[in-house]
Every structure is written in C-alpha cells, then in structure tokens.
Length: 322
Image 1 (cartoon, one colour):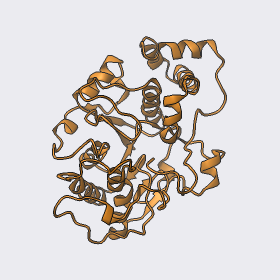
Image 2 (cartoon, one colour):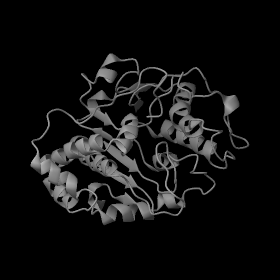
Image 3 (cartoon, one colour):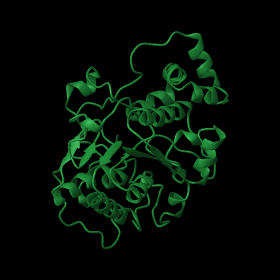
C-alpha cells in the first residue's frame, strides 16, 4: 500500500510550537528520529512512501542526508503551488488535504510523528480507515455557530452528531469519496476569512476540516469509516497492552519539549532501533550534529526491551486532535 508524508514549512505555528516569522525551518531531534522510523517501518511492512513538502522542507531533509528515506520520491512543488488563499497560520495541516487530493487511491496519509510497526493490509475493513475515534465532548469540536466559513461554503447534509475521527493515519481505498471529501475540505479552507482562533481557544477550524468534516461527509455519502484501534474508550488504548502496531507521539510532544531526560530516553530508544534494523541510515544520522549524541548514547547502553511508545489517547473529553 502506498503512503504519503506531508511537511509544509509555511505555518510558523502548529498545535504545539511556534517559530519566529522568517526564521529557518527546523525540527527537534525526537521529531526527526520519529519521521525516519515512520518512513522506514512503513517501507519495511507496507509498501512505498512519498514525501510532499516545499523547497525549504526539501532543503532541511537534504542537509540531514535523508531524501532517500522516501522511496516514492520527494515532491517539493505541489504544496508550494497550493492556493495562497489558505491561511496556513490557522490551517497548519492544510498540506495533508492538498496532497491527499493529488494521490490516487488506495493510499494512506500518515503524520510524520506516527510509526506503524507492522503490516496493516489485513486490518483494512472499510472504504476509509482512521486510527481511532474521538470524543465529541472534546472542546475543539464546536458547533457551526462558532465556525467561520468562506462565502458559499456548503453546509448541507452535515450531521453534527457523528463521531469525529483521528486524522493521524487515514486510509482511502476508493478515489470517488477521497476526492469528494478533499474538495469539500479545501473549499472550507480556501478564502476562509478567519484570521485566528478567538482568545486562547483550541484550533477548532483545522480540526473541523480534518477530523470532523471527514466522518460527516462519509455519513452523507453512505461510506463507512473503520478504526484501526476501535474507539477512544477502549482499555487497550490507554494501557497499551494490546496495541503493538501504532506509535503516535501526539500527546507526548508536550512532555518531550519540556523534559530533557524523557527526550534523551526516547531518542536513544529510536537510535537503538535504527542502528539495529537500518544500519545504513544510522550511519548517516550518526554523523549529524543534531543526532550524533543520541547514537553515541545508544551505542553505550544496552538496547531497552519493548516498543518505545504506543498510541495513547487521553481519557474521554481530554483527548483530541491526534
């Protein structure tokens, strides 16, 4: 199965971190290592993977010697030419929808902070698959009255009681619905006059375009969305005892940004895994100033047991966005 990663450097702010306007694009060490394993493990178990980015993103990965990670190639033109009427300061994940519209089904769009440790073909049981469902009581899932849309946006046929779904990993098996959803999501983003979320509000607009509009469109079209990890109430998600296939850093990023020891521990685990299973890539990364110390640390310590992290949603009404 073909997968795509999408990295746009246009948004200066995302859900977790901001950078000064005009400053060079960069990623944290744990983000780079997660992206590396995300691409390599997908190739190992599931098939080809392509990166959609822009010239600055391509240059960033090129400096690290990582362009060959994506055996399906690196496209640095599509996002650059995407509609400039999209406010990427609000819709910081716009590139995923743009790239999804470009790709032919069957395809998987996967966040770069998500790793799939095994084959998932046998787990695809519906025309669309998401990682897991989301609780409607999460504060970012607001009503139509609190959303700003561009003139003429089609609100018809949307059932606001439908359960949202995580957009961290989505599989589409047919083009017709994939394209219809992407077109409607893009019509919500293009020319949208919203300049920012009010006050300190959660990012309701980008989350609506991905995680709420998708299942709404699916219900309106009679398309079923399956969940790889069932739903957010499953005990196996919170305990991690049954999920050995998916690792998603989403809710761990805040901790990793602020706890240096946890960051070092995770990076060493990832360095161990890359050294063991992908030694040629490890040699490239070990020469990087950003990552060199993590590989030295990994080489000095015995390999830890067990997977590094697993998908771990928050309890009901506290998760979301992942």
